[in-house]
Image (tube, rainbow, N blue to C red; front, side):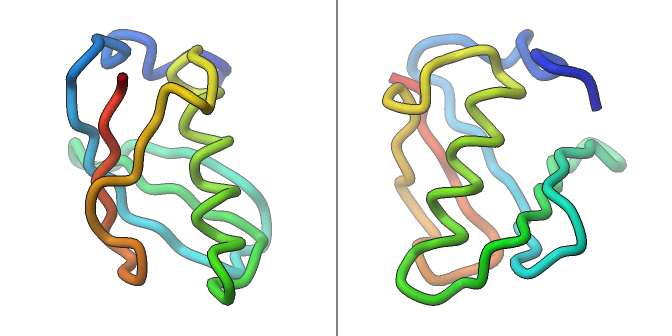
Length: 84
């Protein structure tokens, strides 16, 4: 997936649902059947995967990672982020 490929979703106040795969072979963001799937090489322990997901999602949206807030799914594979 190319950089800024989700830029059309980068609207302030929008919520973005993602499905996360921790300990993946490579960091990647893909959209399958309208679902944003993010694979990160980090393990889920101590929020490491959440941090990596935030960075990848911010890159795909073309925004600073500080603009993304994890609002639901801190310990789940299904997460919801809000763009501030």
